[in-house]
Length: 351
Image (cartoon, rainbow, N blue to C red; front, top):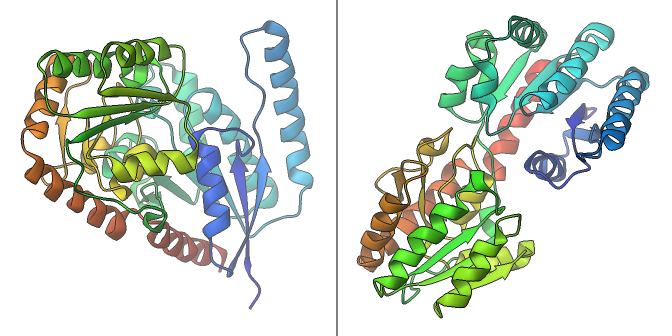
């Protein structure tokens, strides 16, 4: 039997979360799927010249798209705002020129705000794009409800992000408890609240150690607190291998973010055997309950410090919750589960 030819469309040439997903998706799909990519990434910059170049490149990419070999299924990955405008054009081209089944895969931390826009032209474009899709993949039930205001319910499929738990070897006996933050050091990720909470723990002489990884415009906050407290270390940007080592050794992974879809960072932390402490935004509550973590309101460093203090004082509970995290990611958020469902979806659409 001939393999199902699937064309993956998205910003595959960047370092963002969508590019990472496309790379892993293509690598892990079964042999019954022949996956290839169409990279729609463009350079990003604040300069007017760079913006003009990006617009021109995006236009050329769109013009070239219909002249590729016609696939059996097109799988378009999209975020919000400009990403959706670009992705929507590929949906329309694939559905009207090639007349092949189209899957639109929704990512993006602020897609809910995008769907709630007051702009009538934008809402119309959203409706037209969703009407031309055969399936719309969202990452949780929360996003099913958000997208459902424009897309037909029967088209929407919930398929969470995925990781490979076999790449991790967690330990559950860190003593003292090990708190971990690895993310971009930008305001949205909650680095300010995390540093403030850690400062409170250190001033109260709580028995824990802290590792901060990642980089960004607010990295000076991490460097400063590491300099002031001996039990806090800042590693800067970390490789994938080093990130897994930190997560394997961690006890509690903290992501006090202001806006997210379904962060792969939390799934990676679960695979590494960590309790999750995060916020009540996006699809994050679908990952966390009392058995494997704690949810706090975004922007509340005082509540975050109190939550971390409670966990630090109960290492036995932390160990049990961490093991639950690991079990949950194996059962529900592994690539083995995700690719099986994608294989079924492609076969259904292509035949």
